[in-house]
Image 1 (tube, helix red, strand yellow):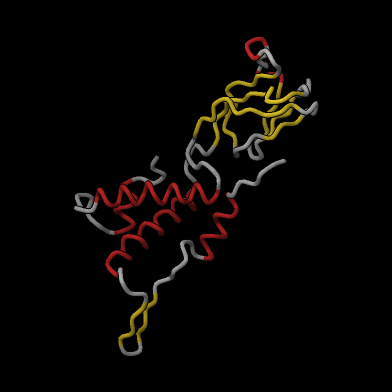
Image 2 (cartoon, one colour):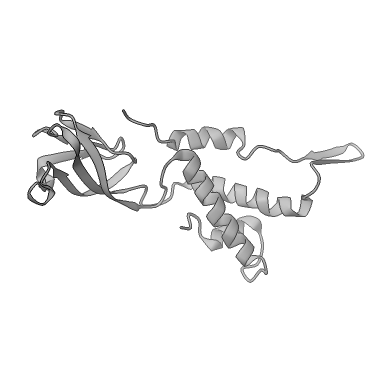
Length: 182
């Protein structure tokens, strides 16, 4: 799933859209987008999570596995799922934290709460797009320098970083990292 547009890749790299490297750039974008999402344990495009199950604990609050939540499609509580669809007016969703509040309480049971919902962002955050473009550029330009880590020409020196993400990128990505809620 592409998180950045081809136009933005070509513009960022300052190359023509009819470049012979299109297939290579497609592979890079898919790979790097997947790495960023895996690192953050988050989805940056709207993604439907179907039939996520939870153990009811007799409490009024339930935290979903993925945040932020765009919308909840269905919420079932109880052993007989077909009979226990909860009306959307009967619960409240706190989108940013992925919390569902149900005043009727989530009845105690194993895997007796089933939720289908949409998580992610309606638009990929700009700072995530910027990081993906930076990583594509680093990878793309790094192909030209494959085989060496640094060079010196007179007083000028250049060194390639070994780290997958820069310190600034890590600071940004950490804001999006999903924390496991127990």
